[in-house]
Structures are given as structure tokens and as C-alpha cells.
Length: 389
Image: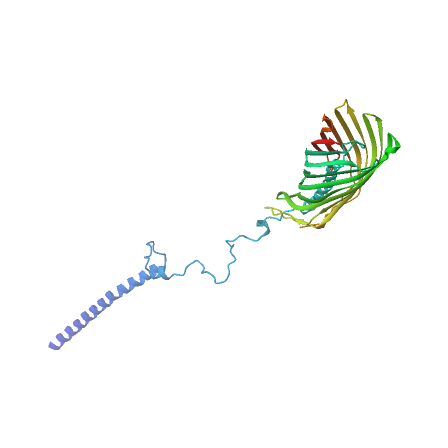
């Protein structure tokens, strides 16, 4: 009995021990299952609670922004693009610049004509064909001119006409700021033929040095351009004149004549002066302009009373064999050589003289041209004091 009781106690103790061990095992398994359930929840739907800023997933997660490439990017450059749409087109106007050289040729032709008109005043263009020896000091406006001229009878038939003056004039884009002019001629008058007779002149006009400014203007797509440049020039002319004069009364002398002239004008080379905008600049080489002229004209001198003298004169002038000496090199056009056509115009003159006392005459005079460009309509007037002796 005692053994059976001990065996029963042993079996009971073993069963209790087994139950206790199973209970401890169950307690240990519940936290593991809870941990597994928590992991399964974290790996499923994301938690709504923001992750701490110091979590590993926030610190070391890959950035969605691509890392910079060490090679050049094809993204737009911050610097101006060289595409044609953003570059302004170059200005146009080379043709207009080349055509402006023709304008220079017209200015230089006008210069030759004006120089000749001023020079004829020194040769007594406003005076009668035959008169006593005289000398005149004068000044004029329109074109500024001041000088002296006169005539001296060398024989009964031969007279010397001469004069010198300083002039300044401008017309149609050019400006002559300094020009001394000298002129002289010989006149042969057949006085032994009576009151109606022929006469002949031969002479020259010399302007050996002039300070000149020429203006060249042209248009571009960006606006007009005007360039004024300075250089030196010289004018020379020779002429011959054949006419017939008649003393129709003691107070009246009339004359008709034909003149042939040859003119030369030498202009030193120059380049456009510096201006802010001149994309089609020009360089002008040394050159000589020339033209030949024929003039058919007449004059009338009349004495009113004993104190007032008048003279009117005029004639038609035709140029021929004209040639411009301009050879220009123009950016965008290359070499440009303008042509100069023949011109026709009318020249006029007149004088009103007051005999203030015997041998002393105060003169008012004017000379000019009427015609199309490049000669145009001009007038040069002045006052003089003439002394007959």
C-alpha cells in the first residue's frame, strides 16, 4: 500500500509538472505570435503616423531626383542663343550707298560751273565790250566774294582784262570754304572798222587751291546716313570768244558772241569721315573732272541821262564731252565710276551803275544760272566801286 500510494503521488506529481511545463510554453509562444502579427501588419498597409525624421528609411532612402551628370546637359543654356531668330538681320542699303556717288559727281559738276561764273566777273562780263581803262574793287554775297578787277588798253585794238578774288560758296551738298580765283584775258577789238565790228577774246580762269567739303547721303534699312568729308580741289578753265559789237548810239552798245570753254577740276582723294553709323562707307581716289561748254549770248549797255549806267547780259550754255573723275570703292558695291551726262542751262547777269562823280562809279551787280540740276538756279550779287581813268 505504501508503494502504491507513493506511485500515485509520483504520477500526480508528474502530471502536474507536465501541465506546468505546457503552461509556460504557451505563455512564451504568445509574445512571439504577437510579434509576428505586428510584422505582418507593418509589411502590409502603411501606418498613418509620419515616420520619425531620424528613421533609417527616411535618412537613407534613394532620392527620386536624378543625380547630376558629369557630361554636358542638353537643357537650354542661360546664355543668348545663336539661332537666326534671335540675331538681328544685317542692314541693307549698299545699292543706295553706291548711287550716292552719282550725287558727288553732280556736286563737282556744279562746282566747276559756279567757279567759272564767279571768274567771269573778273573778266568784265557785266561791262560793255569797249570802254576806257578802269579798275574796280568789289564784294558779293550769295556766294561770298571779294576782289579787284579791271582792264588796260595795251594798243588801240588790244586790251588786257584781269582780276583776282577770294571766294566762298556752296550749293547742293558741297561747300567751298576757301578759294582764291585769278583770271586774265586778251581782247582784240577791230576799232578801225568803225562803230560796228568784230572782236575776239582768249583767256583763262585759275583756282589753284580750294578747301572743299562734300556730303554723301544714302538710305539703309536702319535709317538714313549722311557723311560730310573734307579734301582739296583746284579748278582751271580756258576759253575763246568771238563776237560782233555795235555802237548803235552814243548811249547804247549791243553785242552778240559765241564762246567755247574747256574746264578741268582736280580733286584730291579722301575717305568717308568717321560717323556713328556708316555701314557702307566709301573711299574716293584722286581724280580730274572735265567738261566742254559752248555759250551763245548777248548783252546790252545803256546810259540813262549822264549818271546811270545799265547792263544786261545772258546766254544759253550747253555742255558736252563731260566726264567725272570719281573712282570710288564702296563697301558692298566694290568699284563705282559714275557717268555725267550733258547739261544745258541759261546764264544771266546785270549791272546798275551810279556815277557819283566824274570817273567814279558805284556798281550793283548780279550773276547766276537757271536750269535743271545739277546746275540749278543760282544767284550771286554784289557791290563794287569802279574808277575810270
